[in-house]
Length: 80
Length: 394
Image (cartoon, rainbow over all chains, first blue to last red; front, top):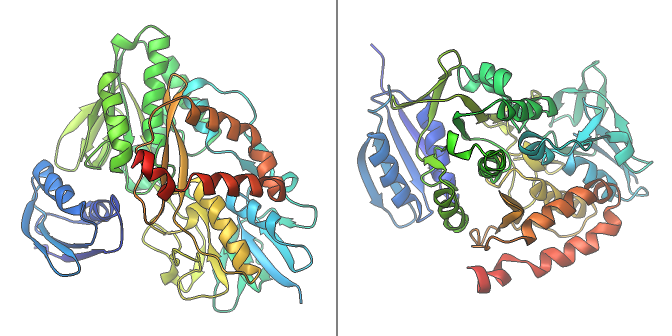
């Protein structure tokens, strides 16, 4: 039985489209069941991640704003 | 005392830097496995216009007479012991190392892509592949042309859409535009990833009837069935597919290994280009893992900064881009930004296209005589700083 992984993508300090690029790089190597946690500081990341989730059908477990970053926790569910 | 500088790569960044360093202070050696320096932006025009002028020059002819040139690949770099190992095993010691090895193509990252490129070519690698694109377009009388991003790392951010716009112009000129469906694919949320430029180009795509699929990540391609498969299971059939291929860093063994990222690009400080953890090694241009665009202007400006740092001056990158973006029909825009200013909304007009043509004509001269061209470029870059242009195009 394959094991789920948790991947951290630290995209702090990257301006748009850096965070989404880093997310896609991690997603390419992920499998269904994996959790990807993205840290970003660019305000454009929030609408981008919502659009990405809506288009791909993966699961947005949590999207929160902390003092110094936006954190998105994604469960990979849509890969074929 | 004269300092030994070894520069890996004789492309835009490497050659410019070598020619900028004063001969009385530095002994400069360029190492490159290729004998020729290619003007890579011209691949776009070979692919979509059948451009026939020469696009390469011997590296040696582009260097000042006092710059040494070794036509060899490098197989290893030891940053601790300050040496470069050549293909024949010979070691070159240095006081300063500059990595300017550019980017290479790694088709293996997307299964099936190697055969697609063999069949239809691409305009990011070689002249031969760019001519394949031209031949592929010429052989199309109808059907679906797909152009687009296949991976997250690629050079020249405007070039994917430039190809789409030039293809549209080409089919219209041939009178078969209504018979060819043009589809652009990208993993970004919008056709162009930077909002300012997207606001310029997205309406153009709509106006010219070009379809685009955003947030589509290529998983693999079946070259026999001519189908592109995306990660969530969708697919698109094509008659001709011109991929923007995955780019990767040069195949050189580095010590320590952790200066490379997962795509073999070299990690560095974004202001000084110093290789992560080393004061005497730099990386410029496409070879770096920096979150800046892989473009000629980036390499050019980074070469300026590193030259100044080597000469003991204070200098820092601003993250400046200034790329002409061809949208066909003799028109274009500019991608102008820096670390502090996102891309401007530079309106479409004739100027960017003319700038691009003029730059192509002066490129070789600019590489060989930076002492003549630098004052012109400095004045131009100063007059067009993003913070100044924001007033008009913010």
